[in-house]
Image (tube, rainbow, N blue to C red; front, side, top):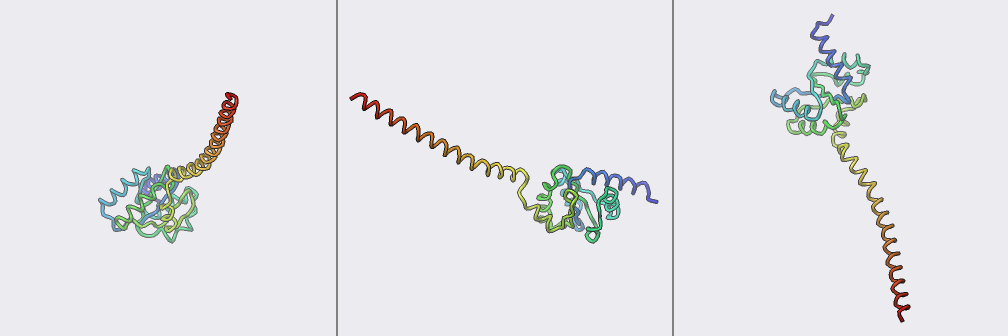
Length: 178
């Protein structure tokens, strides 16, 4: 029979799992207290939350929320912190990896991105992608470019037509004046 503290921890983790759009599991061993606090602050700035919990409690919370943990059992070993992202499922990954490069820690074990198991190397590749806003700007820019070209072509033909009609009118005025 688990004690009340364990039960509360699992309940708290289950709520976080339920709310999270993605969860990244990292090995934080080797970070000092100041670095851990800095890491937590950076994750908070990205609308994410890092929680240090026992692997068995994390696993129980995930399973209670209907997530199959078989695929990542081998990765869920040693000290683990879970980073829960509640808004954007990948926006926090770029700062996470920048922090990891600066201190060579934490090491990403794996992630659950929108419920899908993602290995550490894939998580790093995702972190290198442009942000959602940048991608949307690129799409809009890509759509805008052909439309601008079309408008210039149509406008150019109209300008040419006006020029030709203007010259014809000038010729008629010259011819009518003689």
